[in-house]
Image (tube, rainbow, N blue to C red; front, side, top):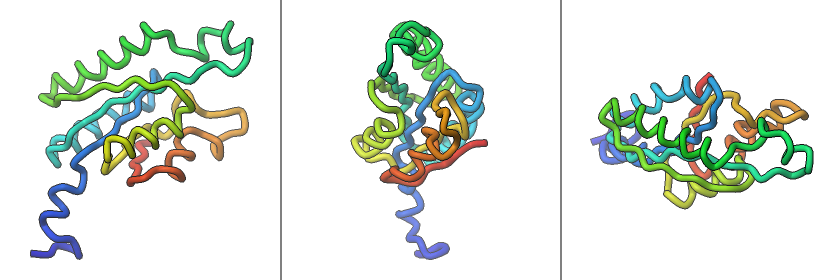
Length: 150
């Protein structure tokens, strides 16, 4: 049977695996209910990812606001996992180190994600602006559809 050009089976597995990259931003927190809704709707497997970017300069190393500590990453992932658990969703957490946009896309490919859901802005907005933001880079590099939550 076909619905809008898709076979029913294709629709059922359309969002089988969802990747939700998180950081401490308000936008990431606001995307969580949408992620929960999608995961429940499609019975998706959920991966919550935190990417820790290595400091590139001595100034970044001295400024604790630019780099998350391992403890802060653990707390962020545990909080996200608990938030989803309260809604009956089992989330798998991943911690990676690297350039956020590239790492997000690599993980999406690695886990065979069908969808990436992320906030429109986060901690990755660069001095160059939106064109070089993590979100924009993920949109352009992703191996799967990307849902941006404003």
